[in-house]
Length: 81
Image (cartoon, rainbow, N blue to C red):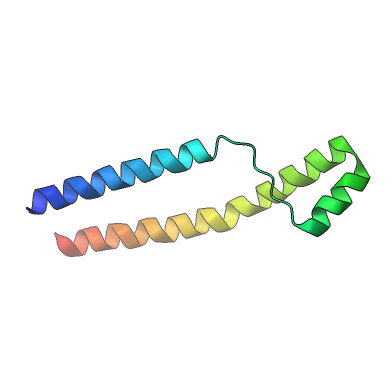
């Protein structure tokens, strides 16, 4: 039963990884309403640059949260063993 539980967790983690991977393939538009209005006044190239900057700044908090979650998961794995 314990092996089955680990196998289910592996399938869940793998599915979650691939799901997030495929969702990230779509173009991200990460603008609030104020940024959208400003970007529409700047023009096409500047709006693309602004959007890329917003997405770039979003990466660090998600990376930190992912690292904390990974450390927590590894700690839980060592406690179970």
